[in-house]
View 1 (cartoon, helix red, strand yellow):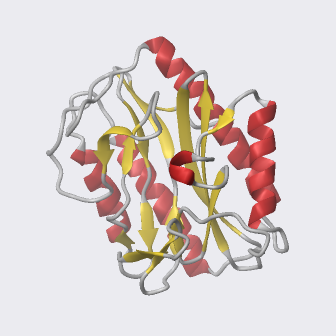
View 2 (cartoon, one colour):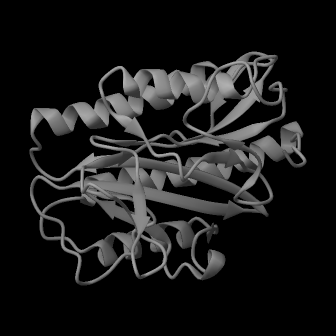
Length: 251
């Protein structure tokens, strides 16, 4: 475990502003997700909005990632690269993951949205993945152990027979996109550092309908489920406060 940086109220306010812009963009994108749109067009919409708000796309150029938005379709878990060749179609599910920098501070959030009508079983995957995020957030209390968040996410998702991706984890966030501590979506409770006021965490379950294993495609970014089962991803940036967790990435 590395160094956990506690944030001042002013710093949390800047992370909150960056996170609010992320949330706004995600809502705009959600309205634009429909059959026939390319993932490249969604990326353009996101980048334009962020720049108009005098913020900086956090992902573009991060470890050479080529776009503003990560767009992951169906069995793609995370880090899908937008492309003119990728056209959304009815029944797809689309993970939208986005980061923003405001005045040197980062915000990060994600959601998975349906394209048109999706089957009840797929609707359930999205509902449970989002519920597992909120189960984790409820455990983000001062004095609790970090792994109580991880365990709550796992218990919620596994209760429905789904599996958690273990290769990617949530993270601290602040002046860097990824800070300590790591926030896994699995594991026993009662482990890891105690949560303190001033910690800011990006909590982000990635839940597969099938098995947990993933592989990375040749583009070196896109992660897909090994068994081609559907995968959903939801994420919020959350501040730990004396009065309980505060979700910063909401409109």
